[in-house]
Structures are given as C-alpha cells and as structure tokens.
Length: 259
Image 1 (cartoon, rainbow, N blue to C red):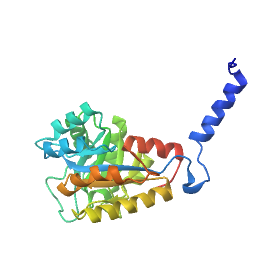
Image 2: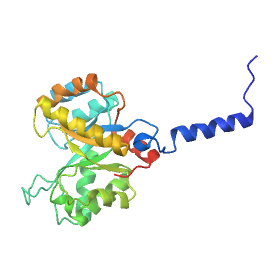
Image 3: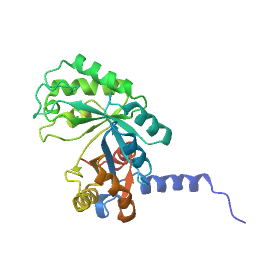
Image 4: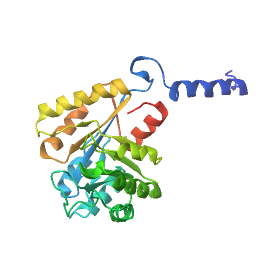
C-alpha cells in the first residue's frame, strides 16, 4: 500500500520544487528553464485582415496597436476575445521628424502633458497590458518626457517595452528606476520584407536568448512577416520557448538575468 507523504517529505518536495524551478542554475545558458523569446508585432490598428492573419499564428505573440487608427479598437477587442496580450504602440517624436504633430509624446513636453497623452491612449484601448514606443528616437532620449511616460504607466500598473529606436534611449533605465516591469527590444526582425533576412534575424535572437536567458524581438504587420510567422512555428528550435511579453517578464524576474 502506498504511504501518504509525511510533513517532512512534503517540505522536502517544496524545497526541491524551489530549487528546480525558481533558483537560477550554473548549467549551460545559466538557467534550468529553456531560453525564452518574446516576439512583439508592431503597427497593428490599420488592417483587420492583418489582425485576423496574426490571430491564426500558433506562436505566442504580443500585439502592439497604434492608438486612434481606423481599426485600433476592433483589433484590441479581437485580441482580448482571443486572450492575446496587447500593448499600446505609442507614437513618439523621431529625429527625422522634429515637431511631428502625429507624435503623441515629443521631446520637451512637460511630464503632466505627457501623462495626459499616455493616459488617453491607454484608455482608448482598454485591456492593454502596457506600452512600447512607435518611432521615438528623439523623444526616448529626453529624460523629462520619459519620466512622464513612466509615471502614468506606474499609476495604471502596466509594463513598458523600450523599442530601442535610439542607442541613446533613456526609457528602459528610467522604467526600471520607476519600479515598472520593463524590458527592451534586442532585434528588429524585418527591416527587409524577405524570408532569408527574417530567418537570419531570428537566428540572432535565438543566440542572444541562449546566452542571456531570454530576448525580446520586434517585427511588423507586413505581408512577408505575416507569411513567415506560421513557418517559424514549424522550424523553431526545440531548445527555445516562445512566450508573450508578460510571460517573458515573469521568466526574467524568476531567472534574475540582466538585460
């Protein structure tokens, strides 16, 4: 007859569970769990066809929806119905377009003005788990403007992803200083709308994930990318786990790796 576990044996099982699943390991890659990759698909909100095509991709993805576009709200509603996490893809001022009136966050804006702009964009897409920047090579270098972004996200209890459109971005460190769950993009996957280029960029992403424990990569709702993502599911390496951005941040917190 099988004996019921004693209190001591149950305690030992708990300790083993913590050691196996929560404590970083010194084995290859630095962690016991497999390397994780989070793929963000930017520039949604313009086409319901693109959203429908993405919804059938069998990989965990995180959608980034530009606010105030023709199909922004419907795309967010589709994601919510399907259980797909989405973030607000916030238009920010780029160096190539100084003073761009379409940028909702611009360098030199007062923090309260930034907060109001972020708040309105978030409220226009209920259910968003956080925000990343669309363009923003100028705005993300402005600590004052980025402080406003982080204050509003903190007030809403949301996450932040620095798209890293500028090597001089201060957004990610400011997000961490603000206590936000945050990460940053490591690879833009589809500068060129070609399958060979996408494959090369994904291989770079996988290598970074194996080295560091995880990596975030960004692609866009472009025809070639939408064609490629279902193929990626078939050719994905067995040692890589695809996750959403909220899942990625949970892995990062448990694994304790640096970005």
